[in-house]
Image (cartoon, rainbow, N blue to C red):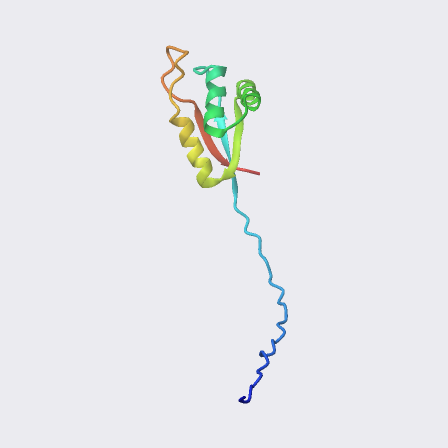
Length: 114
């Protein structure tokens, strides 16, 4: 038999753990604000909020009451691009078929949160 050479695996160097500094990225938040008018029914507002924002019926009803009482209600708080998209979806939702003189969607705006 020939000579058998045994080779040991290379020794692993111990790596020092570096503490990595983590920085939190703070994305500015914006409110989507629904504005009141007299050309849309509670049913319209509730249906729209459920369809566009996924709110439950009870949440949508509470928001419909608040917009009627206070003239405005925050329907979502999110980053700017989504807030602008949601505002545009409100503007594009269409007229309330229950009211013959209703000519279009409700109004909404985007404003910085906080």
